[in-house]
Image 1 (tube, rainbow, N blue to C red):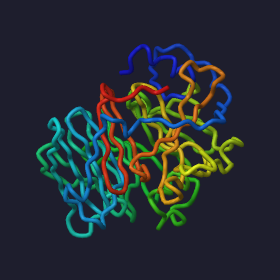
Image 2: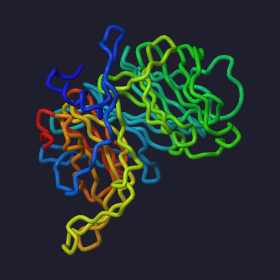
Image 3: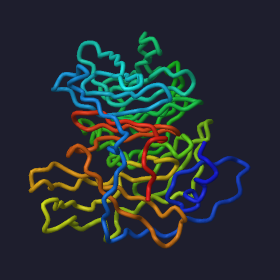
Image 4: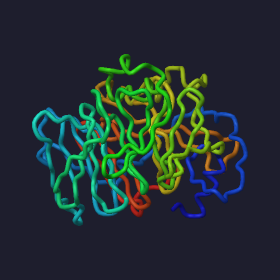
Length: 362
């Protein structure tokens, strides 16, 4: 639950927030926010107190790729392709690591931690079944009941009421499934026919399906219509209600269709294509959108700097501030956070830290 001081970010209509049946009606979302012209340097994921652990040093083969990350009060979790799940336990200056791998030709695509008991659910993009891992690593495969055909799941979120999954090839793009494998209901017709979806990369699922499955600031499951920008929240009973208070950054803005330079003419010169905001995460209760990677730096030999968009905390006319962080000269592939800590993954490392030691946003 966000602290009361976080409420102005909700009012800005750029932060995903919670709703309930007795809540007063919300005002319509304001027009898309403008982005500041200046791109300022920031320390966020790689501050002085941040930690970094190399996947190679932790025993992950070099041909496996990290694709997802989660953080809880006790653990940091990282999912790798084709089928490896790592659990990191922080012990002071050291970390304890445990892992499990898939059997045979399994190919895992997404995972989430169950808020009910701390167990983990894993989805495959090649199988219409879910893998359930207990906190002691015992595993159980849960096939979906009365479901036929080919395909799997590209996205998975776990809520108190059920599991929400996005199939890679289906006529409806969000399924609500109970913990025994029963499909409770399905929603949101696909933009493309299942035959056209077949063989698509999991990373392209949102674009083909026309919806994105994510969480709001308080952990509720919401769906964003990528065509209209509208956001709907699951009510835990199979229904969805519109969230007019939420406004995603508009990818069609002029500021999101230009090539921008940072420190042009200097040895740290970097360039990036402002294609719009990507993943949303929360930094000490404030919303942050991860943007593109700015390539260059170090005399042109650097790999990249991560762009971040931060909404005006007052909801005022300042709009979005644009920042960049040079973090191990690597691409940030995923970021997550909870109330007390954060974690991010690059191709080679996992970065993590506690908000108590982390810098504040400007």
